Amino acid sequence: MKELIELITDEVKAGFTKAGLDASYGRVTVSNRPDLCEYQCNGAMAAAKQYHKAPIVMAEAVAEQLKDSEVFSKAEAVKPGFLNFDLKPEFLADYANGMAGDDHFGLEAPEKPLTIILDYGGPNVAKPLHVGHLRSAVIGESIKRIARFMGHKVIGDVHLGDWGLQMGLIITELHERKPDLVYFDENYTGEYPKEPPFTISELEEIYPCASGKSKEDEAYHEKALEATNELQKGRRGYQALLKHIMDVSVTDLKKNYEKLNVSFDLWKGESDAAPYIPDMVADMKAKGYAYESDGALVVDVKEDSDKKEIPPCMILKSDGAALYNTTDLATMIWRVKDYNPDRIAYVVDKRQELHFIQCFRTARKCGIVPDSCGLDFIGFGTMNGKDGKPFKTREGGVMRLSTLIADVDEKMYEKIKENNELPEDEAKTTANTIALAAIKYGDLSNQPSKDYIFDIDKFTSFEGNTGPYILYTIVRMKSIIRKYEAAGKKLGSLHILKPETESERSLLLALAPFQDAVHSAYDDNMPNRICQYIYELSNAFNHFYHETKILACEDENKQKSYMSLLSLTLRVLETGIDLLGFEAPERM
Image 1 (tube, rainbow, N blue to C red):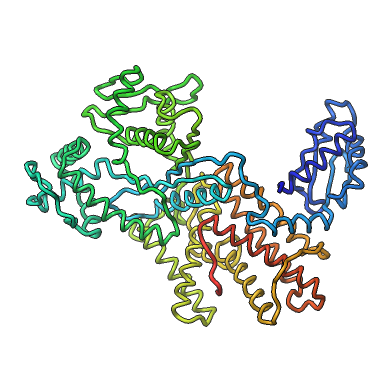
Image 2: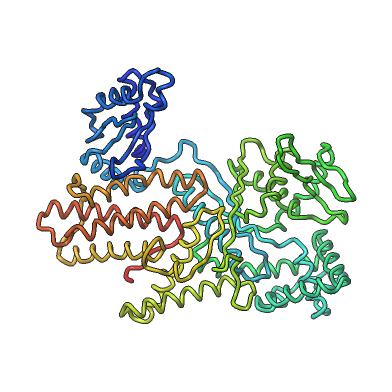
């Protein structure tokens, strides 16, 4: 099923052809003056230079060819050469019925589904998730869902940070606290304990303590560097400790991501790329791509077209230790080997752009990733407090993500208890559901690359462009359906009649661009396009609801049409919020 704008454009292009003009001038857009028309075409203005005719003359010729169109109720030429269109109500109703009869609302599956690896989340093990992890998780999850809805195979990888200095710091601090642990005995050859020598709470305390010591004590810092180096070289006891750290951390991380309704197909880390590093480095050297510079191993990646300096990509430090560059490149190797993806995309802080420019260029230059595989950097902005600075606790520290979620949960619970008589358990569950919508929608409604202000009062409001407003609209529809069925009626076979009122027509016009919204969100990696679509659709439905006596309508056929329109709108909105990664409660 074609997008509505495609169908309209095809009709106008045919009008241009019949008028003796090139069809390429028949591109149609949504009107920027909805008070004058629903759609417009400025092609006659652009064609003036080629045909040496007044635009209004050409526009009138096209309008004449479209006067008997089955698509347009109005096709008029307006000086100095605009073409203004309104759609026939029958055409609008037919299009909506086509959407209603399809699980994907007319969205066609791609001719060749892609295999996409999406790298998002990126938390460091042994550390709790903080508010800085929110955007990668939320944006990445939505992009994954949108791509899957489009018909592509998407593999989400959390890509854990588990291979750098932080591991050496944890091992060093653990050695100081518990020197008698068998993991530190280099002569030990037996089996290591199955139970970890620490809890998640202890682990989360160990890292910041070690990090603080490292900044003040040079000798301690050197010990941590040495421990990191020995871990990366495969020291047996340290590898066993790493496994414990991973097991304890991942179990805790999964619980926290579950609260965000975020999931991953792969729980791989930087350490999973380690086995590929030696051969990768040897190949880079053998082919002459990598060379030594001040003791470090680097690859030149600058290009003549660069407008700013792009430094060489460092592959190994002077002591032979691996870096983020190293593990990211080695990770590409196993991703290509195991999955042969058509595209690898990274949802990360936009401040890491230089790092990914270096890695992508190195991957291309050294043949790590084939030309057939796309490499995409999806950079996001920062989440700031009302002061415009990165979001902090009242004490000025980095806020845990679990604390933020709990704060929004509490805010929503207070609002629900003020306005409803829901039982305690349902009130808490409902509050959690709405709070997640508030957080996710508050983030996703912004363009990913832009910084935004996290305003808890604004995001939890039931009015305006917010998650709770969208959910309230959905719950209102569910309530109408329950009342309709309680009256002994059944939705049954749904069919939408041609609209007779302005609000009915406006709702149909708001529904129609669903495919375009999904395509646009996928093509540009912008879930905010889905947010804008469902917000405008919610507004159109609420306008229709206030202007129409749905349940009190005495004309049975008309009432069935209203309910069919409501049912389609509900399905589309529920699909929209699912693409954003949250759901609606039954009652609010």
